[in-house]
Amino acid sequence: MIVLGFFGARFWWGRSSLAYFLIQLLAFAIFTSLMLAGGVAPYRPGMAIGTEYSVLLVGALEVIWWLAAAWLAAGFLRAFVVLGQQPRESKLVQDLLAALVYLAATFAIVANVFDLPVKGLLATSGALAIIIGLALQSSLGDVFSGIVLNIERPYRVGDWIILDDGVQGAVIETNWRATHILTGNQDVAIIPNSVIAKSKLVNCSTPTKTHGASIRVKLEPSLTPAAGCNLLKDVLLSGTHILRTPEPSVTIKDLSAEMIDYELAYSVADVSAVAEAQNELFDRVYRAAAAAGAKFSPRLGSPPRPAILDDKERLETPERLLAGISLFSRLTAEEKAKLASQMQRKDYKPGEVIVSTGTILQALCIVSYGVLVGSTEANGRRIEVIRLAPGDYFGESGLLTGEPLNGEVTALTRAVIYEISKDALSPLLKARPSMAEELSETLANLQLAHRTMFDHRDSQEQHEERLADRVAANIRRLFSLH
Image 1 (cartoon, one colour):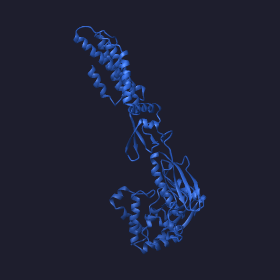
Image 2 (cartoon, one colour):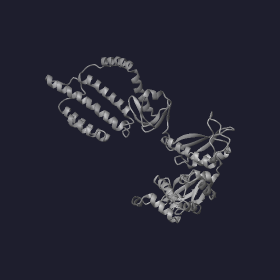
Image 3 (cartoon, helix red, strand yellow):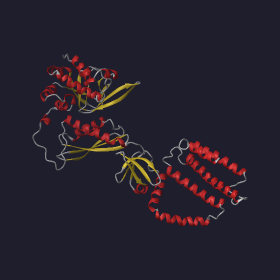
Image 4 (cartoon, helix red, strand yellow):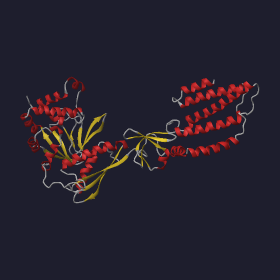
């Protein structure tokens, strides 16, 4: 019965704590019934009589009975008492209670099986505990700190925490001695519980996983502070990783004749998204500043900016926008200047629809000011897909290949857009037939990198025909090139 009960329970170990306990209970009940039927009462001391062999056998069975009772009590604790649905988080407290149960079973064996007084044993155990405690003071400090942390629960498995020594990451395990933290570098930092108990700890996952962050941007005072704030607010509104609630903000931290210091505060859904959101913001700030003609302030100690403006700083708004588009990176300076002279400016009010679903755009639209929202309709609901900020563009697929836009573009704020029409691009393509291949390669790379909006692409067609060749054929057809 002992062997069957042990291996039957082990079969359910880790699968179901309830089934594990029920097997333990059934085996213990049968084992107890068999012992009582044989005239053995393990909870009564000094009851065994008979030959020396039978007394030894009965004593061994009584010891096993008390250990089985402790085993059953520990199984009950793991199944019902301490977070049975989250055994990994409560492992430390479960082990502590189980240790106390087995310690009580040990004293019961001494008193009831061996019929010995336990007072002297308790006194000896106390002295021994003091000696061991002094020898293991550091380790016991970690253990008791772990007990306090598990009772207070300042963090749970899966929470992202930051310690005052700069260590931060997601908690993956808490045990008797230490807490295991998976850092952003995918390394495991093992921090003793006593160190965590004494540290200033920030839990970024409670009460919600929303996490606030900020970046600093220093611009030269070529824009007024109000204009700079509006420019950077549009950048925050265009961020794909930034939450709309709480609302992001721009604060002027310092002002001088050399620079205006802005702080961009925002929130992300999870602390792990901070780095990605920050990278996106810096990229959008750079493009927005370039589109607005704003310049970044040099660092302290850097040589002063030359008084003579270089060619890029002399560029007008259309030329600056055109210079930032990789689609036309192979054009010469003269060709870019000619194309920029034919770009048309259009202004839109907040909420105004710029392009409707299914429209085949006949112009490349470059955002010069404001924020646009690209959305598509699915299951009767309109879903936001992308936001466009100054320096972004859309419509290249319609202009160069004649494909319709599978979505709607709306102005979120007041917006200014510059358009490059098909008629403006056609003379360049006819003067340079090789430009069709250059543009097709660039556009194909953008599409394959999923950087274009709402592309209508047939995956089977892409397998059957090289994408760049198909794009080049469409360009030749639309612009009547041979």
